[in-house]
Length: 174
View 1 (cartoon, rainbow, N blue to C red):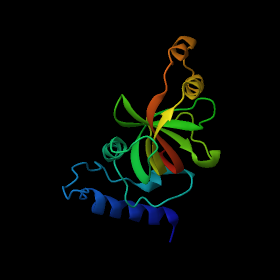
View 2: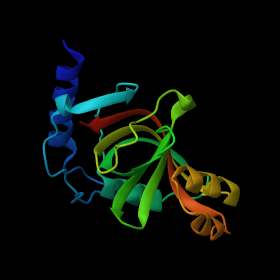
View 3: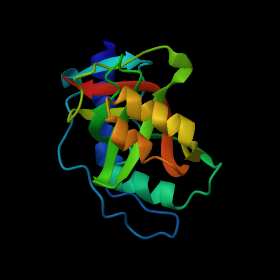
């Protein structure tokens, strides 16, 4: 069977089965994916993967909020791309529901990149989520990659606790 058809079938099944799943305490999860995704509309970067168990960005922020610095969790979730490295597409930032809550995504083994014009695209990613602390030096490096001004970079003086993600694979809506 064609992989795209198989992925589309998994996607429909996942939304049917997991759209209103039970959380750990047995309460219905109210976050639902608003639209049925046609996987044919997505381009693959890195590994292809099943979307079984796909979480929404709202589900993902709950997972991150329950983690401690140093914790990790293998997961698949969908979100909107906020921004992408403008040097070569070697990282991206995903929105997690508001302007201040985001996940910084790197790509496993530096094996693949995403298009530099992917901001605002719908994304589905698979990999490992981490709650981490990013050093001042690394934050400044990323700010340079994002073409921030010297004044903005100079304001970076403290490490930051962040929601980070190491992706094995990414689907971006074309």
